[in-house]
Every structure is written in C-alpha cells, then in structure tokens.
Amino acid sequence: MNTTTLSTQNHTQLPWHLSGEGYILNYWLSPLLIRSFQPFGLAESRFGRLVQVMLVRYHTSPIGPYDELLFLDHAFTGLKMHSNIPKIYVSSQSSVDEGRYHWGIPKELAQFEWGHTAQHLSCRITHENETLSIKLNLFDQKHAFAVSSQCVPSQFLNIKQQDQHFLYQFSPSFKGRLAYLSQATWTNTQNIFPDLSQATFLKGFYSTDFNLIFPEAIKSELISK
Image (cartoon, rainbow, N blue to C red; front, side):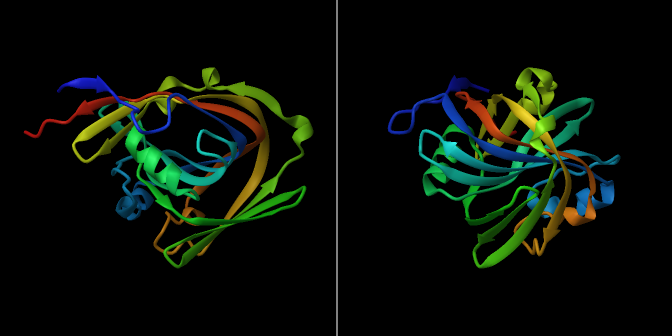
C-alpha cells in the first residue's frame, strides 16, 4: 500500500475552517435494525452499536454557506472501532465535489427547507423527488456548556472513507457550546435515509455557534488481492 497526501491543485485549499449551527443525535441500533440499514452502507453487527446523525447549517466555509445531513457510523473490526460516513446530503454542488475529492465522502445533493422557533427546529430534506422531515425539541441554551474535540474519544473522530480504489483517513476537530435537545421525530424517510424512528434515541445536543476544522486527509491506494 502506497501512502500519500492529497494534492489540492485546482481545488480549495486545506484545511477547511467552517462555522455555523449543528444538531447531534445519538442513537443505539439493535443488530436487527443494523441489518435493515445495510442498503445505506452500514456494516453488520452481532451486538448493536452507537451511531450519530448530524444536521448542520454552515454559515461560513471555503465554498460559502451550505446545509448538511449526515449519518456517522462506528463499526468494529474485531476490537478496533472505525468511524465512517456512509450517507450524507448537502445543499451545495461545490460541497459534493470538494468532499469527494479531498476526503472520499459520498456526498449527494439535496434541498433543505428550515423552520425554527425558540423551542423547535424542523427541516425537510428533498433528494430526487423524495422528502424526509425531522423535528427537534430544543432545551434552553442558558444551560449550554463548552465542549471541544479533545473531550471526545479519538476513535469517534478518526474517520476512514473508502472511495473506489482509495482509503482516506482524517480527524476533524471542533469547539463550541452545546445545549441539550430532548426529542427527535423522523417522518417519511422513504428510501433516502435510515428510518431512525425505529431506533433508540439516547441523547441529543445542539450548538448555535461552533467552529470546525477539516484537515487534509491521508490518501492510501488499496491494493486488490
């Protein structure tokens, strides 16, 4: 396996610095549910596992503002955890192109429609004429607490993406303030996203002002056996 770092010629320069608001949903998936989600790229599990969903509004980025919905999986090979993003939608074609080029992330283009009050956030995501809806119940931000990527086990942020014949490895970092959200309701996920209304919701968080850094990935060629 030959290991190199990515060239950014004719693309945006790295690292990416982004800021915005984000919503993080933690779920526990049973082995049976994981099996039903395999068409979305999840690896099978005998015991079930923790996953995250992130709904993000980037107010600043190297390609301008855009929206994002992603599924972050934490699968195990033996006793080793490896995180990856098997399903992700963004509202910008530039984000699709740059995400695939720099990090091997399988971004797909979608439209996002937002609704927001002091206690609730809602979002409708449409991809190829299919639409899902998410509604989140938010707690008061007076109880928000400071957090950074240093508070998170490194395995959760050590992301590995395989795209065609290459493996991309990178570890984003972030900082901001988090508040709790009490409930997430999914409607009509259809064929475009795992139906997490069937999963066990553990806890959710949100930040109205975070900063994120996406570093340059290490790109490794996969050699077929």
